[in-house]
Image (tube, rainbow, N blue to C red; front, top):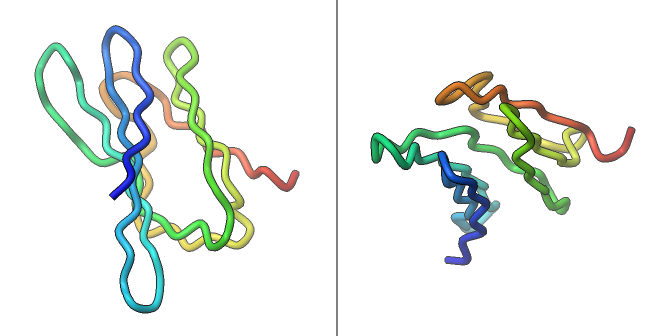
Length: 90
């Protein structure tokens, strides 16, 4: 399993894919470094597209092909960070 990590002084974000026979589900977990608590940001299937993730001030910006995505779970806010989803095709 390949894990992509993005972090700053307060949080660590890990993105990874778990493949099944028919598809691959992508997961994104956030860990609050101060409290050592981990929670899920999203579970999705972006299809053939890839996602990019950035931390800017108090926002977590996720850029993905949401037009062709199946999003099973998506948080709006975690540990004081606003989750922003941007379609890469617009």
